[in-house]
Image (cartoon, rainbow, N blue to C red; front, top):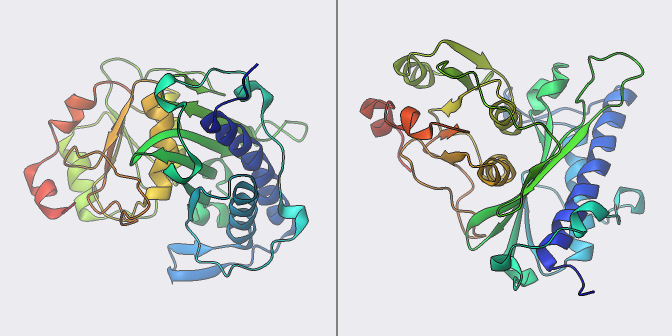
Length: 307
């Protein structure tokens, strides 16, 4: 049997690396000292978990795939990473799947991996643990083609004996796994948006969509999960602030199940290694009926957000 294609090996490793990351996230919280640092202000925090997880993910993947470009959220010194942070495993289930033909010839140096070690840091520090995700997005030719989202605290409200955490993964052309794909109730317009980065523009844009209800939660990964599990019909964020590492993994998973994510103008996000990190023209995403929402974004909002 031929050895699995590079893409499938990267995704299989990212799966195990994300599970290791979840353990680190839970251990830091359980130890009680989050080691919080403000980066640019009170809404832009970094914890010990962000730092350790990024070191673990980047070092683990770099060791196996040395020519891949890995871009992480946190500015970290390139210290020697201790061996206990290295994850060498991979998910056998993913390796058994056939790589889509258009990705079989990919070389290491053509891949860019975007890492958000802890998406929803502010919520993590506030104990809103179901908002927190670990994001590993894999891009090729500037497009998000595969992604892993781990929710370290999935199921945390189910009691002391509950098994915590789950890992969702997807590849374009294969699909996405680890959750139950569900569409939002038909005829209902439920918007999911930011919890801690609201503004007049964000609220004006949502108002223009005349939603039946609005869900405000932290984390881009978490918001995409709301879409693919049918809790929300659109994710709307009319503001700069979201970065490429927030959207790469969620985009791959959403696109793998037939959804769509763009900026507020309808432009696709680019994920090549030279691209600027900020998604400065906001985010618009839906599992179904993307065009309905796109057609209702006010021009005043679009004019305020320059791609």
